[in-house]
Every structure is written in C-alpha cells, then in structure tokens.
Image (cartoon, rainbow, N blue to C red; front, side):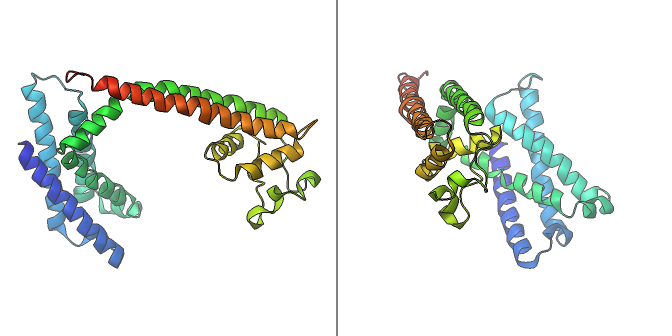
Length: 261
C-alpha cells in the first residue's frame, strides 16, 4: 500500500508542477479546463485517506501519533476537504475567492514531496536528529529571547523618542545620511522596533552606524550608546550563541553514542 501511495504522490507532484507552469504562462487556473488532471489529484487524495484508515485499523483502532502518520493524516484530511469542495462545491463560491483556495491547494499538493523525501535514509536521519535536538534549541532559545527582551526594554527607556528625523544631534551623523534616507526607522521608540534594531545588531548589519546614532542621542554621555551596543554583542555572540553551538555539538555526540539513542 505504501508503494502505491508513494507512486500516486509522485504523480500528483508532477501534475501540480505542470499545472503551475501552465498557470504562469496563461494566467488561467488549469482546474477550470482539465477535469482529468483534477480527477487524478482526487484519486491520490482518496488513496491517502484509505491508507490512513488502514493504519488505524491495523493498530487496533488507536491513532499512532508518530511523525509520518501525523503528517500523512493532516494532508489527507485537509486535501480531501479542499479537493471535494473545489470539484463539487458551488461554482459561485469557487469564483468568489479569486482562486485563493486553489493556490493554497497547489501548495498542499506539492508538499506531498515530503513523503517521497522521507524515504531517503540520510534525510530522515537528519530530521530525527533535529527533532532530538529540539530540547537544546528550546533552552538556549529561551536565553536568547530573554536577552532580547531585557535589552529592548532598557533601550526603550534610554533611547525611546530620541531618534527623530528632526533631531539636531543626528543631523551630522552617518545615521541620518546613510543609504540616502538614513536609518531613522531603526529606533527604540517602541518595543517592537527595538527588537528589530537588536536583530540587526546581532547579525552585525552596519552596527557601527546604528551604534553611532544611539551614541549621538544617548543621555549624559555618548559612551552609553556604545556600551549598550557592544555589551549586547558580547552577550549574544560571545555567550549565548557560543553556548548554543557547544550544546548542539555535545547533544549530537550524545545522540549517536549508541545505536539505541
């Protein structure tokens, strides 16, 4: 049964690619002109549903929440509903959404290729490894989120409302002239904007321009702006990200210490 469904999934992906190329060339949704191709998609969808039912029956009526079974079941239910609605639903409803449902349906159809890739052993092992490392990512990710939260909160209190297009302190800086329009959108005037600025500092995206702008409007002394940016860089790159890399490497080695793990 698995082999038959895999073949059907491959055929569905190929037909979806052909339909997408035809839509890009003509601007017309292929389902409006080709009933045969949609019938093939519906048959593939029904095979997914049948396979899901067979799995439940063989497991004694208990649903197996494994990754493979969960993914196939989600695709089976979602695609079955959308395929039937598209083929047998009211024509007025199909036209009303301006093809948006069909676009979403195409994305779900192409996602069937994930089932085929799952048959490749190396890719499957890589995915299992990532899932096993999720706990490590979660712990270190919490430290990353906490750092962003603290620095954005402090940034709003120290630099909030000081970065404006009419600021005299910024008029003669690279912050006001870089890229022709300046970096005025990079500010701590609200919490969300502060998170964006911190992300740019983390990826070292012209950080010296941002740091120079914050130093120009910093209260008391310009060094406050530089200390703020440099300390954030040290916390993120020297501490948090290094801990993340070390934890991932150690966890990866621990996972493959024995075949059972």
